[in-house]
Length: 318
Image 1 (cartoon, one colour):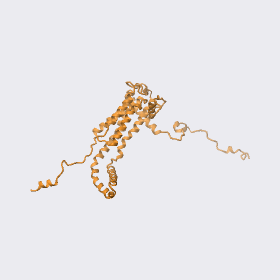
Image 2 (spheres, one colour; image 1 turned 120 degrees about the vertical axis):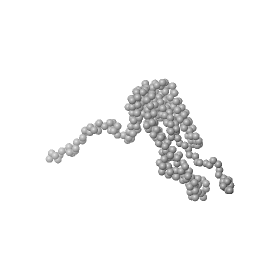
Image 3 (cartoon, helix red, strand yellow; image 1 turned 180 degrees about the vertical axis):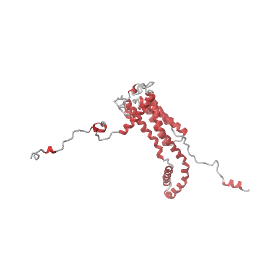
Image 4 (cartoon, one colour; image 1 turned 135 degrees about the vertical axis):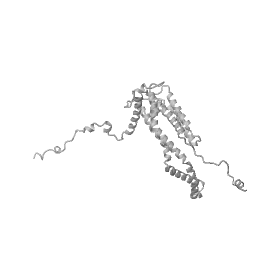
């Protein structure tokens, strides 16, 4: 009878208040509950770039002002140079296939005239352009030199941004690259923040007129050196016979290079040293590839003099 009048709560299974020890040993980033996931991939890449800087500094024993250019050389040689060589080889194959493309022009013109020739020259030209593009994609795809592979050098942009972000965190700067540019425009001072990747040796690892790599250049030489380096790379990379769009693009890049110096007044010296070194190395690698892997433009063969049928017949007659 006593079992029948026992309260209902006594029959309930007691709640377990012991939390698993394995769960408590997890780091806070794994036990945190948030609506948006943490950018673990980006943090891993930045940590890898930081390991490259730290490893080179430990192995060589050089000051940070010389370790940063060495790191730029290492990153460009290991990650970016193979991409540039592959892209250069792809462009050489495309140029070598130009005679084959030229041989198809006559056939494609006949097909365009037969299909839409009655609609006028504009429709015929549009149809011919579509056919040429389709045939070019077919030939390039057969030989494994698609036009899309020419854009592989754009992969160096995220690599550069990851290295710059690692240097920013090593400098202890709170703002990112965009925030530093906005600070240069507004004239406000940059703030420092505690970071797990902060490197105290940057404060005394400078050289020449910039002894503190965590601070901006006090004499403003590095920003204008960066601007001159980028402008030199833009002007030296101009095409021999540029189109109107290439001219406009080059002028736009030149304008960006001119304003790049004033926009980086508040950027730490370590980031500017890496930026300048990377730009100079990129120009040097491009010059080396142009000499070792030249791309010769294709020119159609033309007879030295016009062949006159009548004169040749007179010479052959007895």
